[in-house]
Length: 439
Image (cartoon, rainbow, N blue to C red; front, side):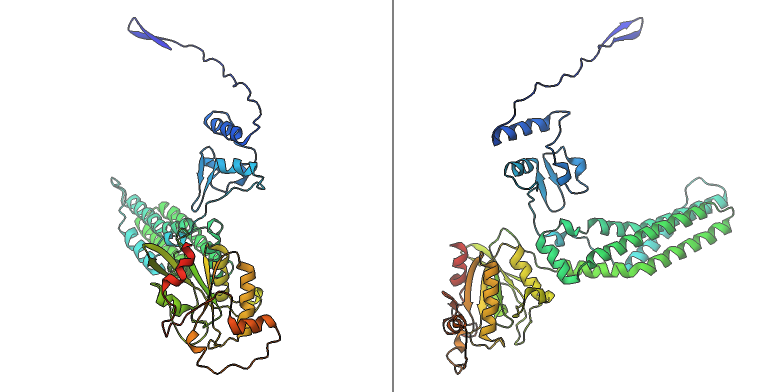
């Protein structure tokens, strides 16, 4: 395109755009390197398509950014190359996701329902009418409509923030999904968020309806009456559903108080029957301060402590005790322990009480130990016999163990087990246990 001055005017000559020519076809890639190189250049060119089958693997809400090399979601990121490599590896069409924990610490602060209502009432009453309206009736109906609209927004916007920023359970790390289910029950988390969203929709509907009615007022008095009626209906609708907000406040407090697990720090998880001394070991080994009592199930949640040894940081996790029963019969407190064992990269420190001071027989402890060992034996494993100072003081317990394995377990304990006593401070130095994590 050129421009020339002719008689004070600019004359432009347009040249037709040359037709687009398709690039020459590439030979089929025969190696993984060639395929990845071809995909990298294809992602930079126009009118190219991503690998077949890629888009269906993306989660809802991220398909609009499929041209990026990396697709992000709240808790994971997906690389285009990951998908290609997965196809090369024959990985059943699944994208490898880099999942992390810590979503509970990012949830928004939830205001109590009473505070939301009081703040909305105060702010909406201070909304003035539009300037320049001379007619009294028009000015009053304008003010009424604007105040009702402001009240509606001040009530609904916080609720929308909560429903959008609380993590979706499908996006969470499997460990955090288990914590939600075991802490609140199946479906309760989604139910509360659904009730909050339903309340938001109800408030929006009522607010728009009454703001529209107020805007059609013909007199000042009518506008004032419709404003009062609209405020009343909005406040009634909010009061009717405020229990959903109160439930969300409790959920937020519970989730935010859950211990943060760093997947990049070596973690030692204490497991065993109830009252065998796990919490006592956590207190003496780490910064964690769990409750220590002489009755079972003192620990009702996951407790976390930290150790710094030789300039290296470790995490220590105290878990609820496991009873001798099938996994399907366990309560939610026991299932918290199984969730830690199943989903977190940990080393297991299994605690045994051969003195039976814990209230669980040695035979039952062995059954539970054998089951957990068979299921999670691929983890780094340390066996510890606690309360070893009581073994020589108590009279020998008469037993008739029909199973030779149980009899051997009663006499010697697990092979290679460490013997410790918190009361007598025998074998409780952290280096005796943590050396297994660094070896």
